[in-house]
Amino acid sequence: MSKRPDFEGLAMFAKVAEERSFAGAARAMNISVATVSRGVSRLEDSLGVRLLNRTSRQLSLTDAGRTLAEHASQIYCEAEKAENEARDMAGTPRGLIRFAVSMSFGLHWLAPILPDFFKAYPDVSIDLHLSDAVVDLVAEGFDAALRIAVSLPDSSLAMRKLTAVSRFVVASPDYIARHGRPAHPNDLNERHCLGYAYRPRQDVWRLFNADGDEKAVTPRGHLKATNVDALIPMALSGLSIAELPEFVAAEYLADGRLERLLPDWSFRGGGLYFVTPSTRARPAKIEALAEFLTKSLSQPSWRWPC
Image (cartoon, rainbow, N blue to C red):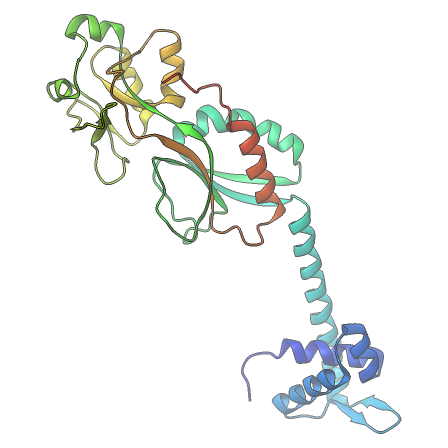
């Protein structure tokens, strides 16, 4: 005897009991009479009890069949309800999205535009996870994430690049006045440079010039943090040099509180990516979020002339 419920057999039996006919059940389920007959026979064999009395002209339920028919009909109705709700969610944006975003980007640039998203999609809610640590979308049950990286490793994840993201080496005018402006990446080895704990692999600044030369700088300063916003006060105070993504640095570069150093050297170009576990049969709520973010962030105000 099978230990697993025969849901298909139960569904066919429920329809036969409702229609009082194998042919009627077959028409209602859009399958053949032979398939219905085999399904009910398989269910009877699995349960070890006869559910229907069959003659050439009529069909009736046994005592066991009458008892099971009520439960089977409930199971069938619940299954139909679940499928209809799932189809409705697939076509209409609604439900909860578990969304992982880096702390600084989420606070500075995502949170301010979320009211517009909720106005457009009032039946969608978001559980926003803000952290610079990279989460495992599948293992931790996230529906989507925004990731900022030079490149993302090949995987089963689906990725859409929303916009480019540059990074700059910056310092305050006060720092430059007191310590001088570095002329070459090697000059940074003797300076207090702030570290970021969540840099991929290791905390190393890799800078390139137009000739393709590469210089690696390991930050050695008074502070290393898991979030770039924590580095800003040190840079503004004139105590250290920092490396900041442009969506953080642009505000301070625009008003002159920070200046870009080593303009002839740059980091590998990065990007802002919308990431989901898969593109296959994505719910409408995820498609709605993807389209909203593409529209809202593809031409961001924080892009800085490079």
